Image (cartoon, rainbow, N blue to C red; front, side, top):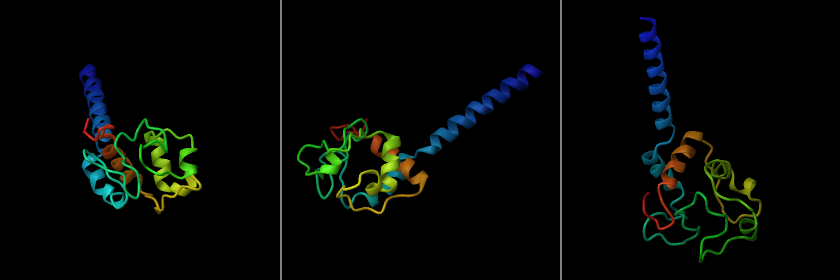
Length: 131
């Protein structure tokens, strides 16, 4: 009886953890958050540089490295490799993270929106195809 109870608790804990992890980042919700970014950035197959660079393959990429985009010196020389934690800090206040960036954006303060946006962006490889 005790063994069954402990097993049930362990299963409930695993289920709760899996459910929490799944809801922590929601790519579909992130697509809606991306509307704030879409004014300047494109993502997906056929994306082109615009006011801002293409965001395909963002995570793992060095800042200032998209071919054909004219970056600020601050961005090119930031030494940043885009990873989710770095992106989360950056998107809250781009000018604080990279002083001198030409990105004019007030930032996103809501951690859930940032997590969702991160999940959405992470879907796209360097070729713009979803992974």
